[in-house]
Length: 224
Length: 260
Image 1 (cartoon, rainbow over the protein chains, first blue to last red):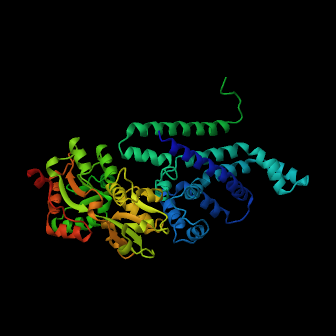
Image 2 (image 1 turned 30 degrees about the vertical axis):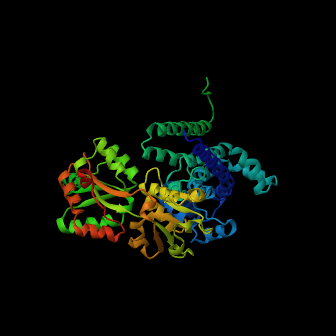
């Protein structure tokens, strides 16, 4: 078992899913309440990573991070190194890769909040922001946890994008799925098997939490 | 209904020419081999399908039943392993070229390779150096050996990025994401990279010889066609094309070696 790769991957997934809460909530808020007629275009753009081949995403991210792109040059001018083949580069790629897995559950949860509650809150003088914080967010707890868990699990299993922009550096960009790939390629099946099994179990656990949370109401507790 | 069936057969490849052979080849052949295949097809009408990857990666696929007829490896080790496992025909093993490792930098690089040679890698402008993954790619092992040979491995190891195969290593430096790369000469001389950068050829004594070897696989259903294709590699037409891509020709071949 490559503990270094495992720890790196858990760290990446935790950072990405946490950042996606911060980034995803405003996007989901806008997607839920905006009446803009072209909103569906933004919805489609947010959902793109679900259907886009990781190689396409990886290719664009690599070009965008490279020292020939404005973003790459800007980053290089302030940090002195390029973004590709760094942990930060992986975070950026993974944010794009997992964005819909956070935004969609968030938006679904916000949209499910009874609009009468929102109107009641507004008629009592609360600003939309305060209403959102006091009414919508608490009622969307399950959706927020779902989005966090799904983007965490999705980042954990990321492969194509990392293969294309990571550069397979131990301790920096060699994630657990790349490690499994390397082990399989070098015919190290027993080691690949152990790591793969662990990923399988973790993924199952995370999804069980997600579905368990959304199994509402608990008419009968599963423990009985 | 029969039309539908014909369409289905077409899609599943059942109606494809019976003698089409499939070649799995090391990534360093990704530019030269299509040209060889085109020349061969022109001469004989034989269709050849190509599949590229790192030699280790392809070996593993062959072990797991990949439907290839011929395997072009970037070293002799992998074909020997397959022969030992009964997966390749020993008498077909043919050393067709010697691969060369080059240090490549993009055209806009300030580094003067002809003056600095391998020491260019120590320059502070070189933040990342791309090489192929030594675990699966012979060129990666050659790159590592060369860095150790020149005594700079420890100084540059933290800046190495590993391509999944030597093609990806070339792509990393070609795209400007790495500032220098130890890649295959065959990529540096390929049309895609030729005018985009400069290279310095790493001396042959700096790394174990990259004997390029091809072998017909035991599972092949088109062994005769596969053998004939390997025969073609011995023609001057093939060897001159290989040398134009920076490959050297082996001083002696496996069969000759055995006689000594």
